Structure formats: C-alpha cells, structure tokens
Length: 531
Image (tube, rainbow, N blue to C red; front, side, top):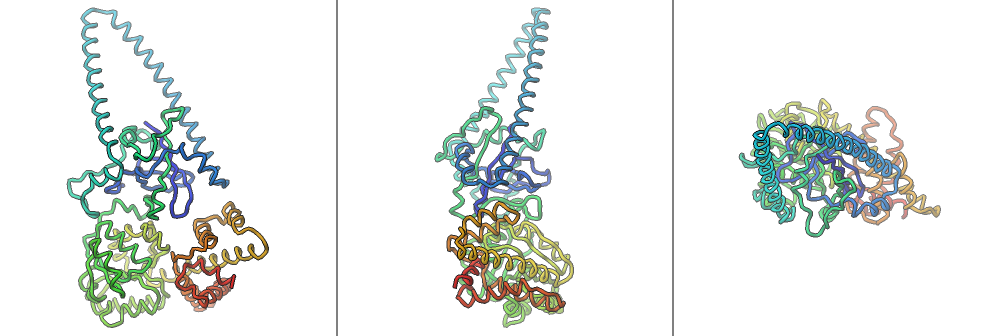
C-alpha cells in the first residue's frame, strides 16, 4: 500500500488545497472517461474526484509554493500533513520491523524443517522453485503493462481508450474504480505504478521513505479555466451520472445557461435549446443539442423544459408572450424556471402553467459563470416535489448540491436574500479598497490582511483581484446583482422589514450603472467610488 498526499491547485481561485487519496463509497461510480483518484480534503469532510493526468511531482515545486502561500491557515495545513506523514511513516516502519522479525522466525523454522529428510528437502526445493517462477512471470506481466502505459501521454491514452463521444457509455464498458485496501487512507500501489509522467515533466523526486509520493496538480488547466474537482459528498457526482431518458429542453443561453447546457450534454442528456439570439445555439448544436425554433416548440417536444433568463419581465415574456412556453404546455409537460426573480412573478408563472395541466418547479441557482461551467452551482428548488425528483440527473450535472424549500415562492425569496448578502458584501469590499487608496494604504496589503482573517473567502480574494488587476470581465453581471438588491429590498418592504444595508449598497450599484458598468462584473462597483 502507498500513502498518497496531493497538493491540489484550485485554478479558478488560485489557492492551494491539500488532499489525501481515499477509497470512494462502494455505491459511488468513478467518472467515465477519466483516470482519477477519489480524495478527501485535509481539514474538512469534503471529497472529490481528481484527474490523475493533472498531477506533477510535489518536491519540484514545494519551495516555490510555500513562498507564494505564506498564510497561517496554509502553513497549518502543511504542518497537519507533515504530522500525518510522520505518523504513517512510523507505523510503516513498525510494520516493516515486525515483518522482518516474522520473516526471520519463518526462515529459522524452515531451516529446522529442512533437516528432517532428504525427500522433504527435494519437495521443498521443487515447490520453492515453482513459486519463484510464478512470481517472476507475474513481475514481468506488471512491468509490461507499466511500460505500455508509459509510452503515451495521459491525454493520448485517454483519447485512445475513449474514442466515443461523451454521454452514455457502451454497455460493455467496465467501470474503473480504485482498488479497495485495508484502510481508506491508502491506495493500492498498482494504481500509481501504472502511471507515467508526461514527457515535459521529470521523474518524481524520491523521498527518503519510498512509501510516500507527493504530487502537485498541473497548472496547465489555467489556460482552459476549468477544474476537474466534483463535489462527491453532495448532490453532484458529475462523472457518474446516469442521465434521465426524458427529453430535456433549455431556454436561455446567457452566462449561466450556457454552462448548464454544456454540462447537461456532457453527461449524456438529450437537450433541445432555444435562445432569443439564435447564433448562441450554434456551439451547442455542434455538441449534439437539437434546435428549437420557439419556446412553445421546445416545450411541446420535450418532457422537462428549463429556462434561465435575466429578470421578471423576461421570465414573464418567455411564458406568456407570442409562441411562448404556455402555448406548448399540455397535461404532464414540465417547466422549471431557473431565473432569479421575485416570489410574485414565480407564483404567477406557476399558476398559469398548472392551469394548463403542466407541472412547475422554480429552481434559481447560486453561483457565477465559472461555477456554471464547472457544474458546481447550488440549486434552490421549490414547487412540485415529484418534478424535483425527476430533475435529479439534470441537477447533478449542473450543480454540486440542491435544496428543496417547499412551496413555490420560497426559492425565489431565499435566492434574493443570498444575493442581497453577496451584493452588499461586494460593495463593502470596494468601499474598503478605495478608502485604503485615498488614505495612502496599500490595497494589496489590505487584501493580504483580509485573507489572513475571518473574512477570508474565495469570493473576497477573487473580487479583490479583479479590482487590483482592473479586470472586470463579467462573471456575474453588475446589472443583475443590482436587480437582485432591488428585489430583495422590495421583499423586505412587503413584510415591513428594514434593509438599510442593502438599500445603501443598491445606491452604489445604481451609480456604477450610470457610469456604464452594467455589463461588467459586479466588482466594477469599485468604479462608483473612484469617479
């Protein structure tokens, strides 16, 4: 057995995480078409699948990574791993010592046995010869396999092994799973032995203890902006989804919808798409989607139709407008609205859909464009519980977890509250950075301090980096977070609940919109403070 500790670089956020390879649950299938390990994150109970070909030797990069990441929590994680390795090494040495003593006792016993009779000697010699011969052949077979695997790059091997398109696997395809071992903190040596590093990477540096192998996730995925991590301990185990046999429709291919559709197709769903600007459909048609000419046509030809549009007006127009969703609804047809709208709007849509015999579910999503692309959204659903269950494979493809919140309207309210908190926090970040600047303080130092404190988060780091780099490419449109703040304030008014923080933040976003920042990322609210 080999203990395998990994460094995992979360490319999206530029942070390093320590992982430990473990055995997956018996009922959890391995992602198809990927050679990967099931890992546990140090310091949490989270698990994920990580692709093997993304790993590089740890020791070649260790000093560099420690210099870059000087945070207290980072160092604590490193210390925890080192302590774990020391303990495991001690156990292995004790086990090795015990094995040596046992072997010596066995050899001594065999030596005494050999003194019995000449016939027994000849039988023992013959038997031992057969064992050695068999062992030698076994070693040759393993070596041959390893050599063959090592002759190709991981990407080339994956292409050779999986020439088919993504989606449902052939019935005779075998599911590759990590061998079981005596402890979940170990992985069988054979799994690692068969893997050869890409030609551009030198051979792994050997530890003083050969039982330990350390790896670093390859930074080559920075170019693609994607990551293989999947939330294996929640709803989404994206690589092991059995896609529903129901026909899926999808209306709206914006920042969020595009990523959702891509993951639905990737996981083998049959999808028909429509978008107001038809050119956006072309890429998905090339990926295997079908084209719907109108929302009504998509609904009438599909079993479950999802929609993700910008605001309450767009959501209503999509359903009630010419050739809209309502015209395609018949008894049994299902409609799932993933737009972030107010509770009144979603309740109205539910009523008209159900009045035609249809089934309705609201399912707004928490996340951004990158999380949508990675299939790591958080889905908030409410309405028809049976339809929620029918959407299971779709939700698994697009998100890391989902919540069912009861009756229609609850998900809309919760989504607005979530985005109200997020939008207010973003405005506060921008306010702090500008105050630091005008008082002669370093903005980078402020970020470093925040990242070492209780406010440290992926969101904080990502948005501050946007501001420091002047990069406001939209990951979540500023105009949409302002819309959500406006709707959240109205929600508070409807129940006579004060929302002064959200109201203040809303005014800042309105000023940013007046400065033509609507189509930039929400972090562009920073510009409202410097103009």
